[in-house]
Structures are given as C-alpha cells and as structure tokens.
Image (cartoon, rainbow, N blue to C red; front, side):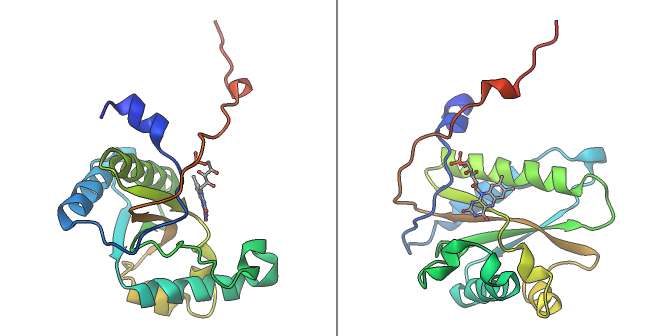
Length: 180
Ligand SMILES: Cc1cc2nc3c(=O)[nH]c(=O)nc-3n(C[C@H](O)[C@H](O)[C@H](O)COP(=O)(O)O)c2cc1C
C-alpha cells in the first residue's frame, strides 16, 4: 500500500477479535519497529511482545488499581480493559537515562502501527498502562515482561484484527505555521 494512503487509513482501533495474528505478520510489524530511526542510532528500546491474556489482564488490573477512581470514567464499565482484549500487546520499554528515549520509542511505535495498517492489522497506541509500572507491582511486572535493567515502560501497542470503524480525526490546519 502507498505510504500516504497507509498513514491516512490508520485509526486507533478499540474492538478486536480473539483471533491471533499470523507469526510472519507479527515479525514484519516488529521489524518495522526495529527499522525506526533513533537519535545517534542508539535504538534505546526493548519490545516485549505479550500474547498471554492472563498477563495482559494483570497489567490492566494493576494500572486500574494505581489510577484509582480518578483514572478514566471507562473503568466504571466492568468489560473495559485498557488493552481492549487485543490478542497481542507490544510493550515498548526505553532506556531511562537517554534524553531521546521517548521520541525514539514514539517513532518506533508509529512505525509498527503503520506497518500493521499496511498489513491489514488494527492497532492502538496505549499510554494508559504506564501507572502499572509506577505502583507496588512495578518491579514484578517489569520482570514478567522481561524489561531490561535500566529501562522502563514508555508506550504500548495493541495489535489484532479489529472490527470497529471510525472516521479520521479532525485535521487542525492552525497547527501549521508557514514562514516564508
Ligand atoms: C502517546 C499516545 C498515547 C495514547 N494512549 C491511548 C490509550 O491509553 N488508550 C486509548 O484508547 N488510546 C490511546 N491513544 C490513541 C489516541 O487516543 C488516538 O491516537 C487519538 O484519539 C486520535 O485518533 P486516531 O489514532 O484514530 O487518529 C494514544 C495515542 C498516543 C499517540
């Protein structure tokens, strides 16, 4: 698919089938992440790919607990899960002591989201898991997710066959200044 068309077609998807993505498709998505540019080519990321629904739920439960009632009104819905029950979640952990980690992980997660779109896989970038790595169970969860020493959670990407449709978000032209 043309790159501009892929960028334009991508949406954040929040309804997923249980069906797992094929291994070769997942490999292509992860490769797109590894192909991302990074400051000084540091590649300050680690991708932990989780296909264990119990562990994904555990991260959700902990994030919900740490956020408490003030987190999001969506927690009032007992079916709500921050990962939307997607069958695959990629957790991006980043080097803590590198000034460009967040930017680099942001580029990598978008590269993967666009690769997924181009391959017919839905995705949503997720910041909501972060509190799970800030509470009592942070170390336990980092260990279970094989987060390397000196790294911490930056962002996650849920992946799967999505069934929801939505319009493109509004384009705010005033966000562009042209200086000639
Ligand atoms: C850094 C970042 C964090 C996000 N965190 C969440 C999240 O935790 N949960 C969620 O449902 N969507 C999350 N999103 C998705 C945004 O809500 C979404 O990109 C935005 O509403 C625009 O919609 P679109 O992606 O369909 O264009 C996040 C997006 C980004 C870039």
